[in-house]
Image (tube, rainbow, N blue to C red; front, side, top):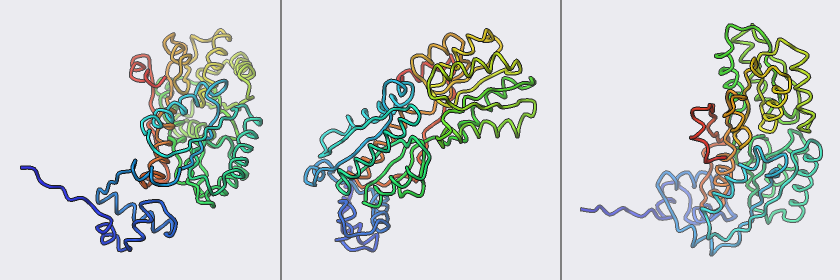
Length: 362
């Protein structure tokens, strides 16, 4: 015998939350007239009660939702990492067709100061052109600066829901940040290398990425901190990006040639993984170096297959894009709040024997 499942109504939610029917209606339909705190409380009660609505129908009736996606380019310097964040965004967007949404995509370079300026200019123009008409913004801040925080705060002050990827600005009023714990990521890489190199004395070279990126800083700091606490026989030597791949390669090659104590190397970012491998090969010391790269793309997969890389730390860029877009979409269209201010994606160690389980993300 089938049991009849009671349909949850707005009146039920009003009674359970203690707010008026009008307030509940405004909160669930993303309308003005209720504070952010009240809206959040009502949404939480509705979710706990299992409330669902015909979101497609209601979205078609409501005004157009304007969403901006501002991320580094998926080609050129971004092809090793940001291509897969874009891929995750597009896959989720395709899964949720049929909504009255205006999605605006913007890209900027990942190359040093020029990329920083491009992102700032895009955000400024977006704010000036759309202002309060923009409903949501998904972006990966390229720099960790007060200027970027101020820009993001301008959007949130206008009521724009902002979701960040990788670099977080907790005080800008953003909805949440989607990222792995970067400190733990560095510690995971260090733990792996320590297991292999334990008993040896020497130096590990760390290609520490962009010194303006909080994500890269935390990753490198986690790596250093692990060895400081767990293995005094290993010295960690960090070098910062020179922004161009060839310059980074030459810098790492010089380190390998000049410092015979180097027994391993780790790249905290995807785009330095191949220059690291090429530098190790050119040094003639590849057989004695334990190399760990970051993230999965055709070139890094080949380096792993060839035995140049011994392992890859996968930070889930595809999952970040998918989860970031999903979080913003569900908040704007369905009124579903994020599970927390920090949304983590899994961090994985990829070896030759398990790479087949990750090939779908390449």
